Image 1 (cartoon, rainbow, N blue to C red):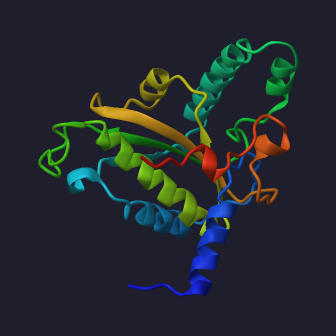
Image 2: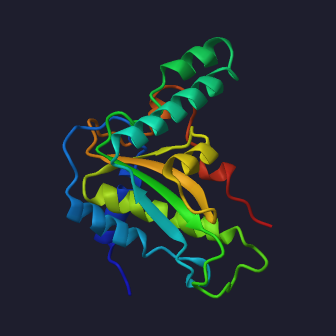
Length: 209
């Protein structure tokens, strides 16, 4: 299969517009659209075709509030590792859209599943996690292609997330996602605009031996 120059250009645009969104409109996301982007997420590669991704849509208000409280506690802890101007800048950052996002999606990797019969996992069992992360990237791109923004909330205690959602013992928490239509559109990362960090040049990360 060969894709023409126009498609490749559009694909690059999709990569560029895939931003970590934290500011959402109240507009709901159609359930059919959500199911479609999840089905596209499931096209991701997985070790031994294990398909270990497990998605939980969190709609219950009490459960959402527990997740928000989890975030607030952990964010307060995180803010204390910085000092002076960095601490002030950290506290000014908007690091989640948990209160605004129409959709909360908790994503897990199922360990010890019979699916895939363990192929490829004997030497590197962590590839189960990597497989789920590739599904998350697919989800992000599929959402963006539908005009939907997504933000990954990493400032959470994973053990508490599992307890809140009462997940099986062999489900490992990978990420908590907020999805919805973005209030703003930006090509550059918010942390760049805020002055927190810069995007690295390829020469800083690509090496030959």
